[in-house]
Image (tube, rainbow, N blue to C red; front, side):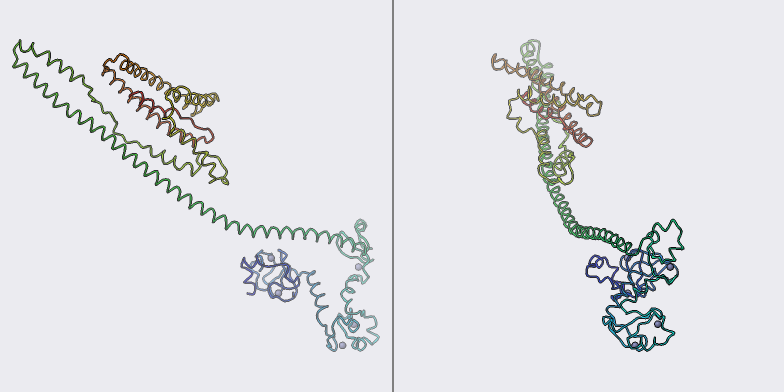
Length: 518
Ligand SMILES: [Zn+2]
Ligand SMILES: [Zn+2]
Ligand SMILES: [Zn+2]
Ligand SMILES: [Zn+2]
Ligand SMILES: [Zn+2]
C-alpha cells in the first residue's frame, strides 16, 4: 500500500504543510484525479482510495479518521471544488489536443484554440472552420478555450437562460425563469450576481481570516507540544535523578543512624551490665559476711557464758546493726531493658529529607530552607544541647515553663475537645506531678547539703538512700513519659500537620534529677 508510511506518527509530525502542493495527492504524489473528500477534510484521488473500504468505513490514510461510505467499493463524494481547481490547473498547464485533428495547442495561445460548448469539444482554429462550417452547426456555441468553463456556468441548465440572480437561501444561481417559478417569500433572498459575488468574496475573506487564525494557533500549539516533548524528557530525567539521589541520601542517613543506634544499644548494654555486675558482686560479697556473722552469733551463744555474753554481746549486736545499716542496694539499680527508641530515631532522621509534616507544594520539595526549617524545632526539642550550660534554675523556673505554658494554653484555649487537647491536659497533669516531686527532692538535697557544709553533721544514710531511690523512680517515670510523648508526637504530626508540637519539658527533666541526686 502506498499509504503505509503515513501511518507512522513521526511522519505525521514532520509533514510540513507549507510545502505540500494543494493539488497533489498525498498518496500518489501526482495531481489529483477525481479528488474525494473524506470526513476529516483530507483529500485523495479516487483511485488511491479504492480497496481501502471495510465495513462501510474508510479510514483516512493520513490521520486514520474513519469516514462513512456506502457500499463495498464506494468512495467518498467527489470534491467539486478541488476538481475545479485541478481542471483549471490542467487547462493552464497542459496542452489540449484538438478533438478533430489531435493537434496539440498550448492553451496560452488562446487565439488558436476554441471550445464548442454544444459539442463539449476543443477545436483548433482550422478544425473549427472545417467541422462547424455547415448550417446545421450554426447555432453551436463556440467560445475561446479559456472561457469555456466560465461560459458553461453562465446558463441555467434547466431553462437555458443566463443566470441573473443568486439566492442566498439555497446558495444557488437563478435564471429569470427560475426566479419566476420561485415561491414569493423566497424571492426576498435573491440578489443580482454582482452584489452576490462581492458579498461572497467578503464572506470568504472572513472565513479565510478565521482559518488563518486557526492556522496560527495550530502552529503555536505544535511548537508548544514539541517543546513540551523535550521538556517531558528533561523532567523525567530530573525526576529520576531526584529519586535516586533522595534514595541514596535516605540510605546514607539510615546507615548512619543505624550505626549510631547500634552503638547506643551497645553502650547501654555495657553500662547496664557493668552496673548490674557491680551490684551483683557487692551482694555476693555481702553473703559470706552475713554467713560468718550468723555462725559467729550461734557459736558465741553456745560457747559464751553469761559474763562473757554480757562482756562482748553488745559489741556483737552493735556490729550486726551496723552491717544491716550499711547501704545495701538490694533492688536492681537498672532495668534490664535496652531502649534506643529506634523507630522514632529512624523516623526523625528521615524527616528532614522527606519533609514529613510539611504541607508544601511539590515544586519546593528538596529546597533546603524547608528542610532546615523543619529540622530546627525538632533537634531543639529533642536534644536541648545548650541546657547543660544553662543555670538550672532559669531552665526549670522560667524559660521552659513559660514557653510550655504559652503553647499549651493556646491549644487548650481553642476549646474544642480533640485528642490533642486531651493529650495536652494529660501532659500538663503529669508534668505538674513530676515537677512537684522534683522540687521536693531538690529541697531535701539542699537540706542535706546544708547539714553537711554548715553543721558538718554525718549524713543520714537512710535518708540518702530514700532520696536516691525516689530519684531513680522519677527518672524512669520521665523516661517512660518521654517515649510516650515521642510516640504521640509522631502520631499527631501525621494526623495534624500544621500544629507545632510541644514537648519540651520532659527532655530536660533527667538533667534536674541527676543533679538533684548528687
Ligand atoms: Zn492519488
Ligand atoms: Zn484525514
Ligand atoms: Zn483540429
Ligand atoms: Zn459544436
Ligand atoms: Zn433556470
